[in-house]
View 1 (cartoon, rainbow, N blue to C red):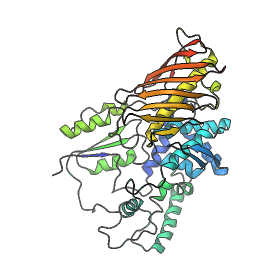
View 2: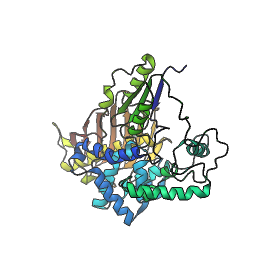
View 3: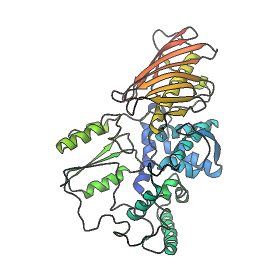
Length: 447
C-alpha cells in the first residue's frame, strides 16, 4: 500500500562497509572543493586538506588547549588533538566546520591564534553532551546501533571473542588501506566519539534471542519496495554521505538519487535554499521529482577569508562612490560586518537562543526557525572591536540586513548598515554609514 518514499540523508542497511568509507571520501574531497569555490580561499593556492593535515600533524605532537565558547555560549576548557580535530572532520557537524576549519588552521599555524580553532572544538564537543532521554536516548541509540549497524566483529560471538576480532579487523585495515581516514591515522580515527558509536560501542552489548540476525535488519531474500523512491544527500554530508545514497539507489527498483551541491545532512527540512523542499513537495504530489537542476546551483559556501586578532588587520572593504572613510576605517568596517556574519552563521548550531562572541560579548536571536532576528551586544570577533546592533535574515528570500554600531580606532562612534542576499553566488555586501564624521560607502564579499 506504500505510494511513495522519500529518504533524505539516509544510509544503506545492506551493502555498507562497517568502516563507512563513503564518509571519509567526503572529507578527502569536500574541504578542497569548498575552498576552490570561494575566491579568497582559492586564491591561496594549494589544497585545503593539506593545511588541515598540517594542523593534525602539529596537534599530534603538541595538543593545543584553552578556553573557548561553545555553541550555546558556555565557555569550556578544551583541547585540540587528533581525536577532536577528527570529530570536526567526521561528525557531520555541517556548514560551520567547512566554513571555518581551514581558516582556523591558518590562524594558528601562521599567527599562533588558537581561539578560532578552540571555539570549533568547543562547539562540536557540546553536541555530544548528555541530554534528557526524551530528547535523545543513548540506550535506544545503542540498541539500534548494535542490532542494525554493520560491525567489524561478529555480534553473535561471545564478548571475549569480539575483542580479538576487532584487533584483527583493525590491523587488516591498517595493512590494506592505512590512509582510510586521512588526515587521521586509523588509531586516531578510533578515538573520536562518533566512531565509538559504530566501532567500540557494541563490543560488550548483549545479544539474546534477537528478532533477526544482528546487522541484518532486512532479510537477505526480501526485496525493496517497487514504489517510486526519492533519495536525497548533501554533497558535503560526512554523516550519511552521497556514496551511501548511491548504494541505496541501486537497491530500490524505482529510485532517483539527487545530490544537493554545497549542502549537508538532511536538506528538505528547514530548507533555506528553496530547492530540496520544493523537489520533495513536487515528488509527493506527482510521483515525479521534475526539474531538479536547482540541486546543482545551490550557492557555494562562503568560507571565512581570514581571522584577524586585531580589527586593523582585517581585509578592508572596497570603497565606493561617495566614500571618504580611510583605509583603516574600512578595515574596521569589514571586521564589523564579519562580526555580524559570524553570529548569523552560528544560528545553525544554537538551540538556546543566545550565544557568545569569538573573543567576548553576547548575542541572541528570536523570530522562528526560518527568518531569525539577531541582537548583538558588544560582540568581539576581533579583540579590539566591540560590535552592537541588530541583524535579520529572511530565510524565504535570502535577504540579510545588519544595523551595527562600534567605535573606530580613535574611539569615535561609528554606525553602519550592511545588506546582501545570502543565496547569491559570491554575494557582495553593500555598506553605508558614518565613522567619526566620515562617510562610509563601500562593498565587500558577504560573510
